[in-house]
Length: 548
Image (cartoon, rainbow, N blue to C red; front, side):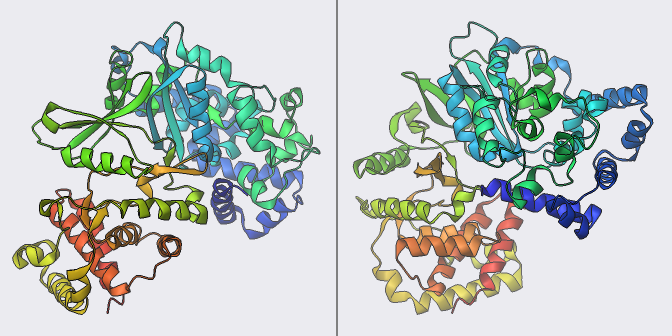
């Protein structure tokens, strides 16, 4: 069972149990609901999702009132039309990957690139009900959609989605119209289309030839209150549109993606993107496109020799020297590490061009529980251990407490917490003094976490973000991995998987000491109060561990 589907099932089970009770859920899973129970559940779900005013208008069939509320909602959630003044809408196509297809983003990207598209902007996001209503207001009002629309809304809003904005490399036709033609139809197998091939094959795994959903988890993920099964079985009245496709169940549950037509893309861009992201689209085709910004630098995507590359550039007014990172990447290439490849330095060292690592971060995917991924990562980390400092100046330490003024620590953490931290560090440093003085210094990633581990179609493809690299104890990367996810429910499990893959058994006290080093390094250098508070919360978790 796909882990994304399992998550959807768990969320739906919780929501439906809360709304309709445990007994209803059990009857739904066993296909034991009467038509009356399904209709009543659909009404309750509609009321809970849409709100009383919208639901009341739907019950009364007051189309005029619904249309007015839809217009009012559009005015609230959509950016003004003038934000698109400098954007040629024919240049761009939009793909919204729905929650159930999040695990197939890599295949969707590959499909776009294979069909002549160039990815401009991509991001994880969520849509709330009001954004969803703005995009699908016709579906909400249409009487033939009132049986399946609530279930589709439940599976869509406030769930992880992925947004891709693409343009055609040749630019000879409307990108959105071409992609819409390649979209395909839900429920029909159409080779080399998005819905009719990628999405169809994904959902077809969960449906039998007799139009039954194969498992209880899939039932709860795709049809938790039974309306879709009732429609396909003919137990409730409908326009029978599902009988015009190859797989009637997939007519309702097998949409998977949203691809607006040319006349819809103006609306959807203004719903799903920020004004700053739309401003990026006003640049000329194939010029650098900003994809992320940090405190010190910005990262752009560019094209060199027909291939996408990343360009890291110091922000205006900031001085950022990428020479050390460039040197690290060149050393990684020598040991055949799976990492970005160094392409060039310019601007006196404040602009670095590197290759893209294929795939996506494994964060928030089922791969964080894959022992195979951790085994590959462990092999990769062994390559880093072969890279040694070339001079004393490269032996950089990370946030050692005794180098900080005690008053500064107390100001950042408070007197009581600051004293507790300093005392714990003093005890742990004394306990591990011989180790700290003799440990062999090798390359340390410095920001090693799920965010930096990439996989392509479920296979480990590399590690990115060596901007914080330094030379020190290799155990520092293991400690930071533990620290970064320490508040997550899966943090301890993922740490154990990494440690097992590395075939090591690190001392808990030493790991705690290194986590404190990282915590203080982040806390004392952080200008954002909200982010600093998160690091302090993590530090408190470390202090609560048995570090002795």
